[in-house]
Amino acid sequence: MRFDLITIFPEFFTGPLDHGILRRARETGLVGVNVQDLREFTKDRHRSVDDRPFGGGEGMVLKPEPLFEAVESLLGCGVGDASKPGAADPKTAIVLMSAAGKLFRQETARRYAQLERIVLICGRYEGVDERVAEHLATEEISIGDFVLSGGELPAMVVVDAVTRLIPGALGNEASSQNESFSAIKQESTASGERAGQAPLPQPEAVNACGRTKPESAVTNYPLLDFPHYTRPAEYRGWGVPEVLIGGNHAEVAKWRRAAALEKTRRNRPDLA
Ligand code: SAH
Image (cartoon, rainbow, N blue to C red):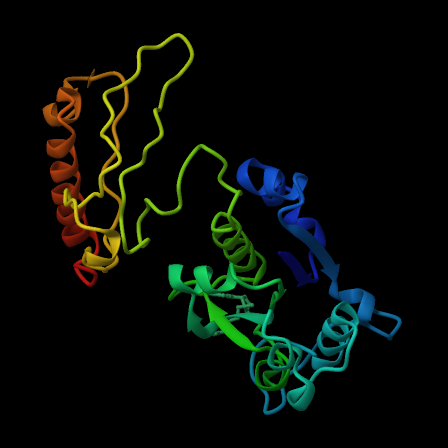
């Protein structure tokens, strides 16, 4: 997977790309991330990327020319409607980060993880000339119902969420099958053993619904993750639920299923 991030603040990405799963995925070549300075595609002395809005009003708007030219240069072909690379090449997406876009969800991340290349356009100021959304981007995406000052953080959110779904990115630490929004939830089979410590009681590889039916028979809806606990078994008087310490795998699976449902109802009644 290759990501191209088009931004007026290339240095913004120095930290976020250099830690944990993302760092490892880049080091092992699982993903490549290219940060493209939009100003390289300006032609005037001031390297201006923005201009005042037609029709008046507050703030500045990112001009279309540098953005079209940046994407064309990255993809090595002409873009715009008829030859939109996303349309021509179903393995490439050109994503405009926008508070007015369609909501980015786990299913969007899963779809993106199947692609070969994602170009992410980071807006700034009042936003981006609409012709970019209409004729250049293949998708206009929002990361939530709030307004940020730029598309860099949203683009990072997309890079992170997609990368951890690429097979091999998570290593043995965790499984993306076993998380909030993964729809079909399964228990982790990781031992959780740490050097010099006795293993914690772990359930067998049974699904979180406590059923023995095959996956396809498990109700498919976006349940949030179940609550996790680790040592100490008692902290400041707050104990770990007894059932997790008991080592009865079927009971653990039942408890987790119920706790995940309870938490979903409490925090996200819209999903329950
Ligand atoms: N005037 C715009 C907000 C512009 S914020 C509006 O009211 O919708 C400047 C830039 O930040 C946007 O162009 C976009 O790239 C980015 N941005 C802000 N909020 C975002 C969000 N929730 N999701 C994705 N990108 C966002």
